Structures are given as structure tokens and as C-alpha cells.
Length: 188
Ligand SMILES: Cc1cc2nc3c(=O)[nH]c(=O)nc-3n(C[C@H](O)[C@H](O)[C@H](O)COP(=O)(O)O)c2cc1C
Image 1 (cartoon, rainbow, N blue to C red):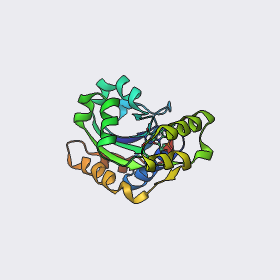
Image 2 (image 1 turned 45 degrees about the vertical axis):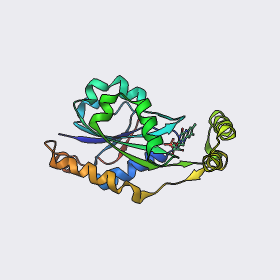
Image 3 (image 1 turned 90 degrees about the vertical axis):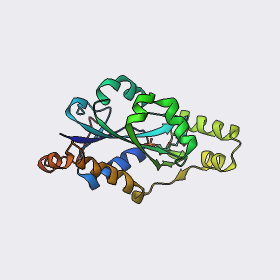
Image 4 (image 1 turned 135 degrees about the horizontal axis):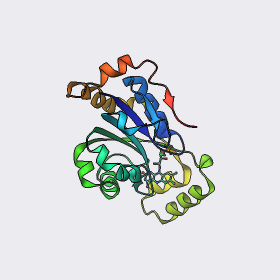
């Protein structure tokens, strides 16, 4: 039985959290776009995704692979500007099938947005979003960026990941014998 961390993202914050989780758990970590990642090889997944435009970026991949994912243990971590709570829960409900949501554990992590690093298109969309946003705090974040990256915030995700060991799926034993598995494996 094997566990993996799989993530997507553009500007590195979801990847950073995935790497921190890999360091703590020993699970291998993959970019979901990598040809090295074989979904069928794993029984449990920690899935990491940023939120863009009120949607989970990884949602199309989850919908495409729903049947296969439903036989696995799933922990989802989202990375967003918004904190965890009802607004983020609403974005998750609009992004993912209800049967997937019902069978997963979710953890909200907060990310980073450096306006200078955004693509021209993303920067324009964010600035326009800021103009239209009636919430002054959210507008400030959209105009000035933010950095909420916090290594300590992964602690509950690590705890949930390691608790998978006490289920019928024993991740730890496989990871121990899987030498060098925590190295990031991408096609890039
Ligand atoms: C184009 C774009 C759209 C975004 N939309 C949202 C959003 O709707 N809600 C939110 O809370 N954060 C939003 N964010 C903030 C991202 O979730 C945050 O910057 C995250 O850390 C990005 O992940 P990445 O570095 O892995 O790409 C957006 C960021 C970008 C660049």
C-alpha cells in the first residue's frame, strides 16, 4: 500500500507546501502534470491545489479521475489568499463532486501572491478583481499582494497523513522501504 503527495500550481506556493509535507511524512511528491506520476500506483493521496478565481485549480483532474480516486484515501489541502471558512467551503462545493467532498479530509492553507511574479494576464485580472471588490481587506490583498506562507500550518495535515497509517492502508511501511522517495519528481 502506498501514499503520495500530488499537487498543481503556477507560482510555487502549493509546491512549497507539498515539499514541506514530503519532508515531514517521507511520502513521494509529484507534480500532477508530470508523466512520472501514475495514479494507479497509490492507495492514498494528499492532493494540493491553489484556488484561482474562486475555483480549485485541480478540479478538472479530480473530475477526470473520479472513479479511480474514489477507491483511495484522500486528504486535500487548498492554498489560497482567503482563510478557511464558509467562503472557501463554498468554492470547494462549486469545484468538486459532492461524493468526492464527502469522502475526503480538507485542510485550508494560506499562500502567497507576489504581483511582480504574476503573468500579465493574471495581474490584470487580479487588479480588475480588486477594483470590483467591496471588501477593503481583500481589495488591499489584490492590489498589493500578500505572503501568508507558514510552514507550521501544515501540522494538522501531517497529523492526518500519518493517521492514515492506523487504517487498513499502511503507508509508513511502504515509504520506509521506498528509498529516496521524498525527492520531487516532475517532468520539468
Ligand atoms: C490568477 C489568480 C487568481 C486567484 N484567485 C483567488 C481566489 O479566487 N481566492 C483566493 O482566496 N485566492 C486567490 N488567489 C490567490 C492564490 O490562491 C494564491 O496566490 C496561491 O498561493 C497561489 O498558488 P501557487 O503559488 O501554487 O500558484 C489567486 C491568485 C491568482 C494568481
